[in-house]
Amino acid sequence: MVKPLASGNEPSALADNIVVLDFETTGLSPDNGDRAIEIGAVRIRNGVIVEEFQQLMNPGRQVNTFIADYTGINNHMLANALPCAEVMSQFCEFLGEDNLLAHNASFDQRFLDNELKLIDHHYSGEFTCSLLIARRLLTEAKSHSLGNLVKHCQLAGDGQFHRALFDAQMTAKLWLVMLDKIKVDYGIEQITFSLMQQISCTPKKSVAKLLQNYHVQQCQY
Image (tube, rainbow, N blue to C red):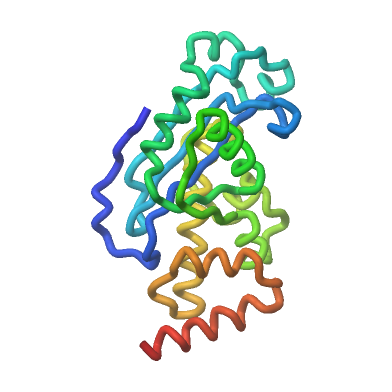
């Protein structure tokens, strides 16, 4: 299900379009045979959430009671859901060539790669991780779980954690908060996706210097 939300014509500090992704799954690793059971995604264009994608998907196997309790997704809900292959094909159309963001991205990227491998699809965008970035920019937060960061940043939302679309929506809002923090704290007007990737792998003690240098370079052009 694709849902358009806004025109996306408002100005932004971010130069790149991005799709924020979240999976709910039957377990922790596709290497153990686990599959996706729900995908949620939102597209950010010019700093505005403009479109959403959400689908349950039938993994061809039962989900256990722990996963059902954890996500609220049970076998009855999945019985009439489209198979993973069909949903993932639809998601590829939604994604296009945009870059990707997830909270704890290594988890979601593993499942995305696995599901797309099974249908012989691929994506051209690159990933970055809001968890790694938050650890470097929001150092005062008590923890950097998505739920705690939502409370820390006082982000409003209507839904429940561990459902894919809500988690993607909250991750998108967190992303925009971090972009705004960089803009305010360092005076950087155009924040590229590649800069955010660089922040995610820079030691915490070196992030301020990285952003200060980036601002100086930006002012020279």
